[in-house]
Image (cartoon, rainbow, N blue to C red; front, side):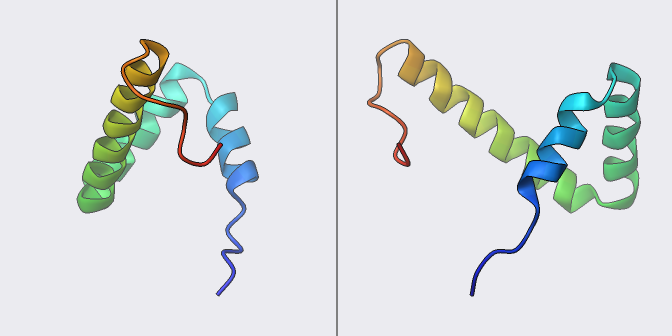
Length: 65
């Protein structure tokens, strides 16, 4: 099944958000969708750590490149 989610639109919205808007989003996710907030947090943390390792030459290129 093809993924039809509009990732570009979501990414563009997130990039354009102010610090206060991001804070409000985080608060809303934690208050109303705690499991999703935990999942997003763990995924972002893992990808950021992986990126640092690649930049520092500890790992090879992205697997999707």
